[in-house]
Length: 320
Ligand code: PBG
Image (cartoon, rainbow, N blue to C red; front, top):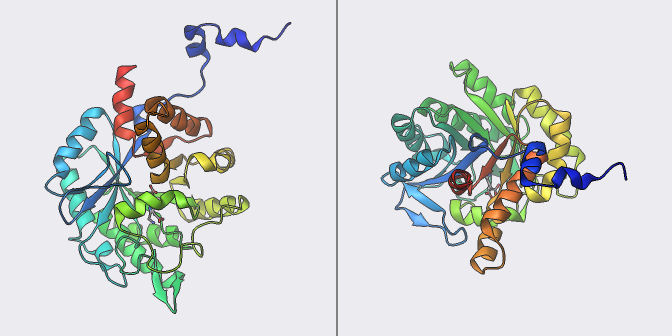
């Protein structure tokens, strides 16, 4: 036999020498929920909390000391209304969280998720008229939310709403207000997914009627992923995202091969909760399953991985 693929696997040292991808702490982004109420556990996401502003500094100390260099913030306001006004209130909960974080850890990369669903009384990601989410009336509100987070000190804004044209609207308002160095991480390829279930408990953002299928993508399709990504890059996205993670690695691979901007993959709440639940039952090895899952995302072409396991992974990397 001339070719024996097993020769490349013969010892750990050889395997390490030839390995293609690995996880680095700088790949990790930790999603965090900041609440205007008291700190609370999220029952469907064991180990994840909604933090009050009072408890945020302690949580951040753990994040930073583990070596995680980027966080993704979601705000959970006390008051919600039809137009999601708290999303673009300069004194809103996420804006206050960003300001506090930047005072404590100026070098920590703060990414603000930009969407209306946590802030609207109906739980949809945009303005509702006659039971429909109206695209063009939502754009100025998303742009205002992005500007407000940039003013608070966010390094990156990450629109997750899936309205058409939002990247352009956000780039425009940021540039017109002197924030040309604030990056946009676009949730370009965001599928309408049941894997977001636990997140909606965490962020209290489940739609009160209907679903998100008229704006998030249909999981039976892959071609529109290319159009969505192309549009976002043309409108000014610096980083693009595919979401969820594991069930959509085929899409991530396509996007990473076709486009040159850095790719992020979101290892979403349902993926987190499934691993947690199975490992709590003792059925799987949590650490190994997590490392294998997120390494597969690197292999598919992601540079960044947004995961609720980020702090754990950073600690595990120290142990190896
Ligand atoms: C807001 C948003 C969602 C997630 C990120 N941003 C929920 C949704 O679209 O319903 C999901 C993240 C996760 O499941 O971890 N639009």
